[in-house]
Length: 214
Image (cartoon, rainbow, N blue to C red; front, side, top):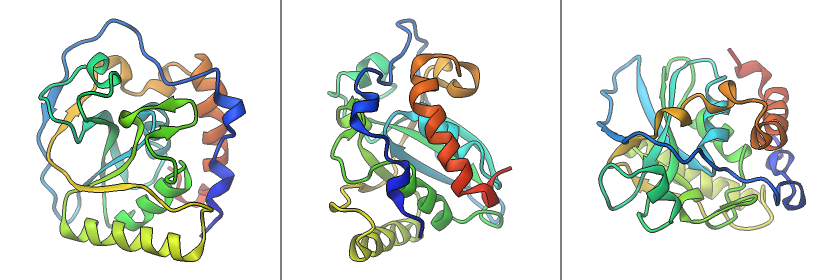
């Protein structure tokens, strides 16, 4: 497994830019778990600001749809403003629809763990709060097993200098985020957070996983 550390941006680089949003919003709506079959499966992952995570997984072969939203909380139909308080219990996540014949859940997790820091509790760079926690919301027992085994292997191998704190929790509900959060990096590449945080991360990701790109 490639060294995960190549993807971790230094704290000094990102202290003055953090995941933010426009004040206007539209109501979030609940999205039921998609039906999974031999050609379609769903993964729900949290790895900090969903703008970054969405941009990465959109580039992968076998991935047909990536939506930014919220999971793991206690209230229905949360808004971004509510989630940002850290009091709803939700994490910023992406819901990934993929073809397991083209890319496996294990491969998705390999990319997941190498493109964020799973050892920092409730924080990614300058983004701090429970909404930015590292999380795998598993849809099946197989996904749970793969996630737990992957974490155990990474901890045992010493891939990270600190223990992984990624939450592994059964999926319940995904609430899609407001429209302006969707496809954010592609539509707002000149924004400071995109150009200074996401773009360097994307360049490293594409170099390391060039064989998995569309």
